[in-house]
Amino acid sequence: MDDVTFETVAAGDAPVVRARIPAGGSLYADAGAMMAMSPNLVVESSLRGGVVGALSRSLLRGETFFYLTISAPQSAGEALLAPSTIGGIEMLELTGTEYFLQKGSFLAAQHSVELTTKTQNLTKGLFSGEGFFVTRVSGSGTLVLNTFGALMTFDLEPGQQYIVDNFHLVAWESTISYQISKAAAGWISSFASGEGFVCRFTGPGRIYVQTRNPAAFAGWLSRHLPSRG
Image (tube, rainbow, N blue to C red; front, side, top):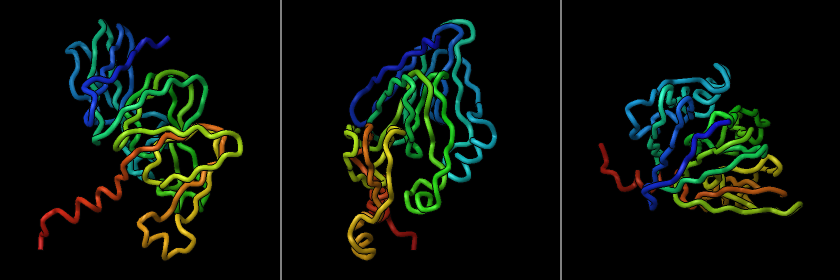
């Protein structure tokens, strides 16, 4: 049994995760997530899902090729893990439930949690903002997500529908079906509104939504940066 435990510290706009790793235990995390650790811990780069899965993440989803494996080969220790964005941290206890993740939302997990890539159909791949592959999470254990802004959850009953902007989406249960559609009735209105495409979900299941839009923030930031011309 994996006895690695996680807790959130330094709460607020810049939370950090403290991972306690027992002797002989290990975890894996997003590349660059390690902020500080006990001197007895060992950090190595690793592939999850093999070379094909790593290539899918890196070339087709714009994510890291490698994950970090942090282990305590001889004695227990702790590691502090920090996400790359300002926002929240959420820990999900998986008990066989499958989730699909937005790119960039994975921070860390116990080794009993499996990450694989799943192919989307052509329409979803083109218009979802996620590309032709999404990350599927399964197994059992603790999964740590990071969000841009705070995190909200929506629990859908069977047949209940809910619409979420693509860039606010963090994760959703695999029991939920979804379709990509325009935010407004017409194409011009959809893009003029700044919304573009949205995901139309149908329950049952849970959706995790972040309160800030990274694409909108990047656009706002670019307008306030000094011009290089």
